[in-house]
Each structure stands twice: as C-alpha cells, then as structure tokens.
Length: 498
Figure 1 (cartoon, rainbow, N blue to C red):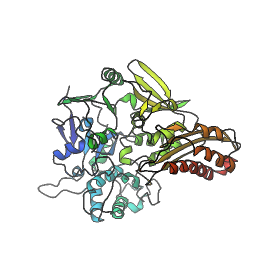
Figure 2: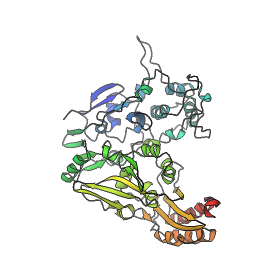
Figure 3: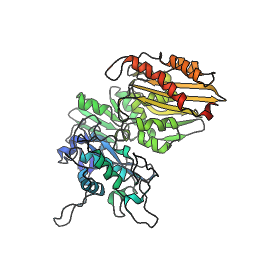
Figure 4: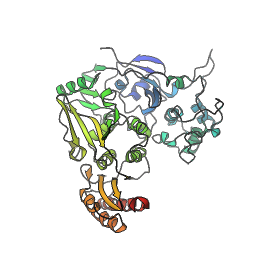
C-alpha cells in the first residue's frame, strides 16, 4: 500500500509519522503553517479553516472551505489543501509576496484586528470568491469594480453586489466583533483574474479518491476503493468507527480524547455519492455533503432547501452528510425531522445485501437504531410527489449556527381547503426524532382553518416527552410546538387553503 501523502500549498508531503487520529489542523501547524489556528476544536469558530479541492457541482473542481480541526489528516490522503499562507503569490528575487485579492481587501478595509481569526476568515472568503457563478465578468470580458457586478442578483443585507453570500462566513467568529469591515472586504472582491492559478484549477479534474490503509502505533485509518470492499471490512471489524465528514467524531477526538483502533472512511466512495431522481423517488447518497446536496437539488425539494441554511454553518455543511446525521442518532439533529415529514426511508447496506427501512421505524432509542453491526446507510430515499405545503421551524438561541432546542418540519397536502395528508417530524422533544402521529390525525380530513389549526396546536403541544435542560425548559418546548403550527397556518397562502 502506498504511503499516504497530501499536497499542501502545491507541495506534496507524507502524512507519516502523524497518528491516524491526528487532525489536519495539528498536522499543518507541526509543519510550520501556523496561520491555521485552534479556537474551539469543535467546528464552531472557523479559525482553523482551510481550502480543499473537491469534486465540483458546476465545474470539475470546487475549492471548499473545511474545518481543519475536525478532519483527520489521513482523510486528506491524495488530496490538495491550500492554507492562508498558500493564497499569496511569492515575490521574485527577494521581493515580498503579492497578496491574494481577498487578503488585500481584508488589509485595506481593516478586516483584521487581533488577527487570530483572520486566516480562517480569509480561507472561507476565498472559497466563496472562487464559487462558480458568484461574480461573472462584465459583457466586455473585463473585471470591473465589484459594485458593477450583480452576481446572483441579490442586493439584501446578506448578499453583496458582487454576488458574495455572507453565509459563507457563518462558521467564522471574530471575537473582536470586527464584522463590519470583514463584510466590507467580502463585498469588495471582484472576479478572479484570467491568470489566477486557483481559478484555473477549477477547470481540471479533482484529485482522484485514494484507497488508504494507514497504521501507526496500533491504530488504523482505512478507506477502501469500493462499497463492497468496505462492507466486507465492516463485517470483519464491526467495532470500527465509521466516518464521512467527521464533524461528529472530530469533536469526540478533540474534546473527549476519544481514540479508535480502526477508523473506516466512507467520504469518497462513489456508490455513496450519487444523487438520482427517479419517477417515484429521489435517492441521495449518504456520503454527499449537505452543500453538494443543496446545490445539486437547487431548490427541487423545498423543505430541504429551507433546512440547509439553518443547519450549522457553511463550513460544517461542506463536510457533514445526511448519512452521518442519521447515523449518530441524535435526538436534536436537524435533518431527521425534515426527512420524517418527507416520509423518507434509509437504504441500509451489508455485505450480505441491502434493505430499505422507513425512517419512522429507524430510531429505537437514544442514539440507537435498527442498524445492525457491519451495516451502514448507503442512501436516503424521498418519495415523490412532494407535499405542496412545507415548512421547517428551528427554535434556537441564535438565528444561525446553533443547536436546536426544538425542530419542527411540516409537509401537508391541502386540496379544496381540506387537509388530505399531514406529516410532521419533531426533534428535541423525545429520546429520538419522532413523527407527531396524533397531530397528523387531528389535521387530516379537516378544513384548513384557524379552528382546525388551534385544535391541532393543542394536540401538538402534548407530543413527545420534552425535558428541561440548559437550552430550554420542557414547558417552553411544548409551547413552541403549538406555536409552530399556528405560525404555519398564519403563513400559508390563502390560495392554498381556499
């Protein structure tokens, strides 16, 4: 087996002698690339963000910002990484380096105060800078001032005139509260120049997935070439820790000092990275990142489109997967309520074959499921057609990038003013994500009216077994369930309910 290697800022180097659990952050800092910082070690602050070349959605390759504090460096075997130090162009004959446009704007607009978070902001900003279609050139082919660009046509407070989506920075924290000049820098960058090396890299094929078997000090990191090989390995090693984006396991490694004898990576398996739209369902590969799903569906599943901006941060969504979010079995995961409302099922794969399980039957207890040893989630299936009236309400202490106190997803079919079908998924009110069966029954067959909504809201308040903790009291959670249904009724277009 070839020794794992990683390309950092254009230079290839071996991963050894780093231990298999070593994060990309620690590996980079040990190599002297100290612009990459540790702030939280949980994927909350973005001080560690770096760029990784990944398979593109609209181009062969995308530059994607990820939390280096969460991803094992072994998971980057064969991959290309760019840190804040690698963005600048080295000067000739002893001359100083030429700043990258993102770095230049951050400097001239005062976007750096203490400087600790700045490299991470710059990497996240650079990923958005290189997002295909963000800032097209003017009709004459020239790159003009950013104010001349309309980007995607956004002009609101969260999108710049250059098409820059400020949510690209939602996973980066500035403890000096210097957000205004950072935003100014983001809204000032234009389109990449014709000779921009990193922009040109997007037109070339992404790094090929690498089969990895890396053992050090008795611990192993393994990525097989195919799903079949992976399933055979898991049959022999049912105790192995399975990861994709490592947004959950990375926290365990950093905060709780968890270690595993064997970690098996699924993130690059082609069989888990497909998205298919069939006549009766949509199948989403379990190892596709949430960002990839969001951009490939492009609003085709409105309930998922409403979920994605509220799911953690862009940095997390660039690594996190539906398979991982369901696999951890957390009762406060944001995707299970949405998928329950969509009547989704999971395709479970084992070396002996596959089976499909409705998500409503998947969870059996706190962080427990019907998934057997050696079995993994291959895909999520969403049946078609989709409900006409959908909504996702996330109750949390912060508007974005926070853990839910309560999450509620609605999917209703309303015809001629009658609720023909209702599906409601709940998170944060029981030991597992649950369906609100009693509330669904209270709605179906009834007129979609204020009286029906108020009666069903009282039923919804009694669903689940909410508890009190540091995020919310049991009473507050119950109250928010009822209010959520009333909010849905208030916001439903009259044309739908007529």
